[in-house]
Image (cartoon, rainbow, N blue to C red; front, top):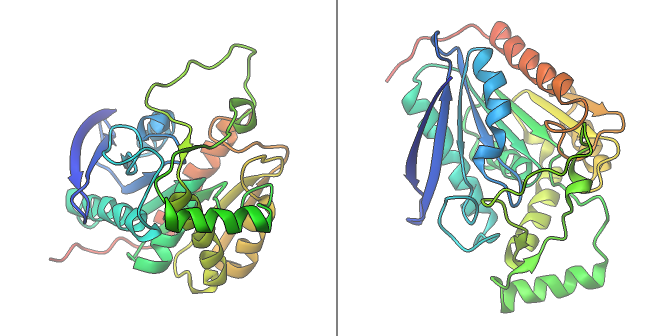
Amino acid sequence: MIHTEWKLAASDGLTLYAREWLPAEREAVGTVCIVHGMGEHSGCYAELAGAFTEAGFAVLAYDQRGHGRSAGRRGHSPSIMALVSDAGLLLEEARTRHPGLPRFLYGHSMGGSVALNCALRLRPGLDGLILSSPWLRLAMRVPALKLRIGRIMARLWPTLPQRTGLKPGDLFRAASDAAPQPDPLNHLWITPGMFVALEEAGEWALAHARELDTPLLLMHGTADRVTSFEASRELARQVGSRCEFVPWDGGYHELHRDLDKDDVIRHMTRWLKARLRSKPREPFRE
């Protein structure tokens, strides 16, 4: 697997850190662009990228603004459209680096909301969309009063840092009792502006889900303690026949790290390959 790194300039001038993994001994058959979750960074998906490159895909990822090595206040974005625009920038990078190849977009948790909103709002001509435990709603619904206060704070002090409250034991079931090593590039911060933008983006995406024009693989653990399994079920119903909905019985939030991760990754890889077979490759044109 070949790994490269570079920087991207977002539409508002913010610097984003990006990386790419390539198959070592074969030409890529398609591209997968990864949008990571809240508090994470692109390097958290190296194992998943390895599985995709082994299947022949070039994998591109970036640290979302306010995350990892990218610039910006930790856990903050000025709007959902800033996040969506950043994802669109990575998709354009995939088109430039690998002209003519099918493009797929993968998003997990908060990144799932960004990826879905990108597909719906920008309509970038994807060959497929994969969503893992997307943040459409939280597993525990936010009380109306608390949400109202959050909206007020989003107007008055949108960049106020607050703890997300995420705990490692809520994210995935470990195969051993050994505690995972802390990652210095991860963080546990979110701002009122970011929280309200994502809450509203989830509801907007559910309301416009019937407009999705690309095949969707939607996966969610039935025991997710972070994001709402029922909201994903609602999304699947709205999208209809274009969606393959896979509930992982007993699965936690991070399915790609959970006890069934090998099966999860194999399912995604098979789905990607099936999309290649179902669509003849078109010649690239300027």
